[in-house]
Length: 639
Image 1 (cartoon, rainbow, N blue to C red):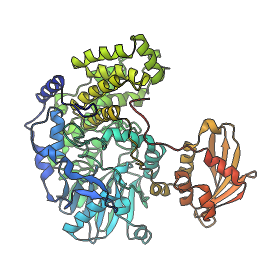
Image 2 (cartoon, rainbow, N blue to C red; image 1 turned 120 degrees about the horizontal axis):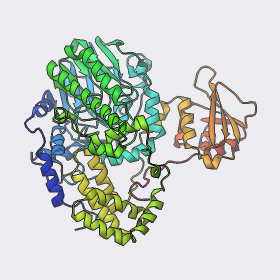
Image 3 (cartoon, one colour; image 1 turned 30 degrees about the vertical axis):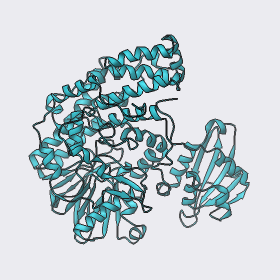
Image 4 (tube, rainbow, N blue to C red; image 1 turned 90 degrees about the vertical axis):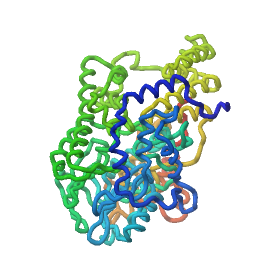
């Protein structure tokens, strides 16, 4: 067998998956009924494309999960079931006047019909899928103008397709409003721009878009079958923000009551109740998965205490008056009694994790020890919507510990550890050399001890990255761990590691949520913040300069920012000029964004007149010369 080809399940994996199947609530079939309810039509073409014709996503690629109820040996039986339920796609009626586009992207797009137009909630990840979804709705419900675009929270899969839904002209003319929770823009930027390159690279592991789709590859993404690659992301800034629970808006005859949920699934988030429809949108706070308290792609750790309290408030505010609950992922649930039970069990899930982790923390347990022993009560564990299809009990436990205690477990050996390459070299030397470690690891592999194999061979790969036997055996171990994972994001992480160990890192070009359109939506302060993040501090440590930067389109006379380069930092002060400025730069905010983003350079901007410099241009060139380019395709499982 080709060393780069995915391998079959081992006996140990087959036995592990068969044992797992014995403990699942197979008689509960409600999800299969709910996911099909209200189906209207699929996309006529399951391949969503860019204007150039290049595919963004092929939805038909996941149809194989419908072929058999029996999970293949290479897929955890619970995950196989979730992938089947999660494979519904197309346009669905939620209730009279409310529709969803589901399964055509990582998130759902919800459309609420008003007196004359529509309200669109969360325009998916990319402009291409958002346009395809809106076109499908209009094909079956008619062309109605977009009266409002609503972002439920600050994650990119809930705003990225905004340009396909609304236009700047409609917003400027007051024909469309864009509603978001308080703090939306700053949180969207901090997550997807400031740490955007690292998060995007890590997301490739979490969602597995580079994996082959199939029984030995990517099966599901938890929140949907999977996301596309190569889409164009955009961000239309909000024109109206909600800050307080109980605030209402009436748009095109549709009344909406908002419940604030900051610090739950996102730093900026709200839920929406529609009184006339007796319908509740829970954004991403109650879906058909155990959600992440700390997502594997990386983000701010979430507050399980705030989460359970928010859902408790939701039940008391809206539960008795709700006939359907829907979220911006997965599928709805109908019936007041069933909805209250669902919300209550999701609430209890996050409270149990929170409280029990802190109980064990106060007994002196470390994050790894806590995660290994955590189990849910049967009443929670046996609900399909509480299973670890996105977050997991293991890494959510560690997230609670991190939020309260931090990364350090108080063992001094972990206070100042050696970096991976150095600890790898010393470990391999202690164990008698790389070949000796690999031989011992082979014996562990044959016993099915794949976690141990993955651990010890990390030291060999980081010590001797070209040791082919170590790479291949670690890839084999990661692969079996992936096959045994109920959690699809864990599966994707393991299989991506195996893929890159076998094939190396392939540079597939730029994939970024921090697009120029997103940067154009940022305030000048946010752009200067990002500029400071890109500054090479060690290289700039001994450099001193002062610039005035005039944003010419910020108000009647523009706004001037005094920039100081000192001690490896870029300090900015708004509405200020420096008496000793080396130069004064004038540009629009968009041109500043283009310069910082790297889509243009200073000489081009000066020559075409989109920027001007009074004083010493060399000082400006020096500053931009100190900005770091962030390459996406950095190594993860090798040095």
